[in-house]
Amino acid sequence: MLDEKDIQVISQLLNQQLSQQKKEIMHEVNLLMESYFDPKFNALADGLELLKEKCVSREDLEETTDRIDVLEAVVKVHSREIEKLKKSNHIA
Image 1 (cartoon, one colour):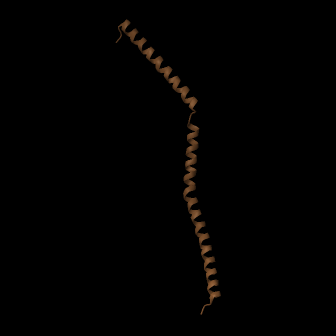
Image 2 (cartoon, one colour):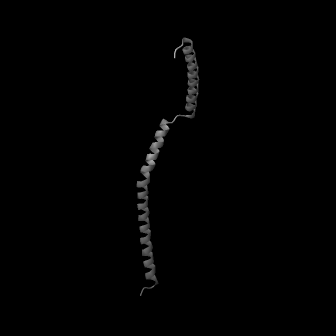
Image 3 (cartoon, helix red, strand yellow):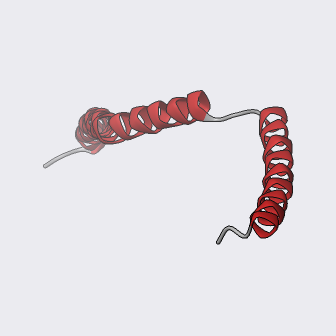
């Protein structure tokens, strides 16, 4: 028959074994997570880096918008002038 000491020793052995298994499982989980998520995060980081390279600053965007507004105004003026010239020369 098992006495209390035997039961304690068995309990300690089981606890040690469970602890070791838990460490092994956690290690495997970490490896799986790294192998799954690391490539995705790396691809995401690469994509963000490409976006940074291609993005313009707010100032550049405002400057470009201003230039487009000026070009649109000039095109309207030129279009009116061309129409006037066509009418004065009777060009269709």
